[in-house]
Length: 93
Image (tube, rainbow, N blue to C red):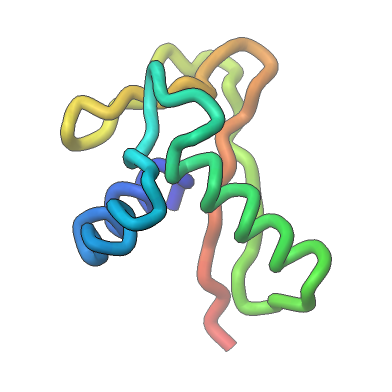
């Protein structure tokens, strides 16, 4: 799943937590204070530095990508040339 898909699902499942954090799901105009940014940093840190081994980090290339649009009119801002979107996959162990 992309970070945007995770943020949308998290917001749908835990709206009170999202509100408490003070983040919106993300997308154009949200800047560094979006849930997408928070999740990408948090998950990447846990995978890279804290031994989380059941989640895999990958990147969706921006090459030939025109736009990423999700439910709720959330438009990914990472689909710019040279900026890849983060993706996470739960590894079956």
